[in-house]
Length: 119
Image (cartoon, rainbow, N blue to C red; front, side, top):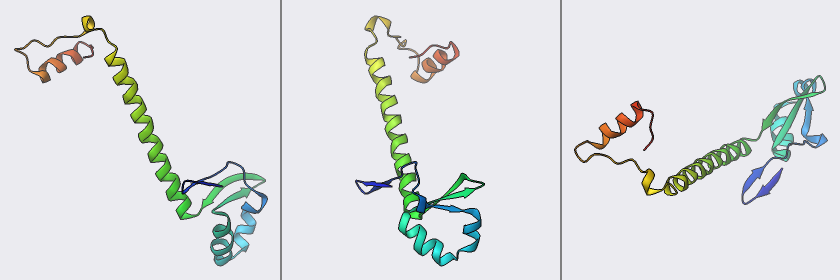
């Protein structure tokens, strides 16, 4: 796990002490699981049949991951909109579609959609 700018970043790899087998999980007490292991590592990999099958995260790490995901989704949307705006700004004025003055904007846009055109 890497801490950068107050955000917990999880590496994909687990250290040996961050892995716990399913049988070991059944044997250890709640106190040991939550107060020792999870508190110390912020994440635990649950191994079953020698295969990593699940991850147990500290609630703060989980919330930070969700916050980061939301932030990245917003950044992606902003970048997509910026690209679309750039593309629209680069359309030559001779390619613009003019709305007749007598027609409402809503009717004009509805007609474009029906004709599969784009404003």
